[in-house]
Image (cartoon, rainbow, N blue to C red):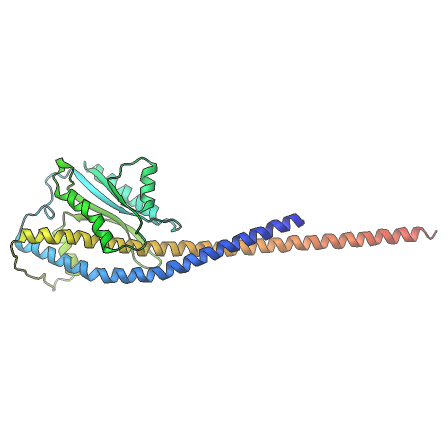
Length: 307
C-alpha cells in the first residue's frame, strides 16, 4: 500500500504543475483577446470606408477593371487560408483547414484549378505532411499581426490576379479565416475577395441601409488609375482585418481550451487525492490490525505459560 500511496502523490504533484501552466496560459490568452478586439474595432472603419470608395468608383464610372470584372470562364482560383503558428487552441486551426478543404472541393467541382496560400505553421505542417502543393506561405505573426504582414501576404495575391491565367495568374481570390463573433463563439468562414462583387460590396459599404448613398467622386487622372491605386489597398485592408479577426479567435480558442484543461486537472487532483486518502486509510487500518493481532498473540502466549 505504501508504494501505491507514493504513486498517487507523484501524480498529484505532476497534475498540479500542469494545472499551474494551463491556468497561466488561460490568463495570458484572456488578456490578449482584449487587445486583439481593439485592433479589430480600429481597423473596421478604415476597411468600410475603403470599400465605399472602391464601390463608388467602380459603379460611378462603369470602368471595366481586371480586379472588378469577372472572367467569362474562370479557370483558376487562389485560396488564402489563415491558421495559427502555435497549438493548444482546441479545434481552431483544424476547423479552418476543414473549411478550406470544402471550399477547394467546391471550386474544383466548378472546373477551376486551385492555388493555396497559407498563413500559420499549423496549416503549412498539415499540407506539408500530406504532400499537398502550397503556392506560398507566411509564419511567425498569427497571434499579433501588423499591417506590414498584411501587405506581405497581399502582394503575391494581387500580382497573381493581375496576371493572365496562361502566365500563372488567377481569376478569383478567396479567403478562409475564423471570424470572431464573441468570447465563446468563433466561426470559420470563407469569402471571395476578388473580383469584387459590386452588389455585395455596395450593401456592405452602405451598412445594410437604403437611405445612405455612396459618395460621388471626380476622378483624376482617370477612374481606371484610381482603381489601380485603391483596389490593392482594399485587398490589404481586407486581409489585415481577417488576420486580426483570426488572431482574436485564436486567443479565444486557446483561452477556452486552457480553461477546460485547468478544470480537468482540478478534477484529476480531486480524484487522486481521494484515492491517496483511501490508500493511506488502508495502510493505517492494516497497521492497527497487525498491532492488535500481535498483542492478542502475545497475550495468549503469556496466558499459556502460567499452566
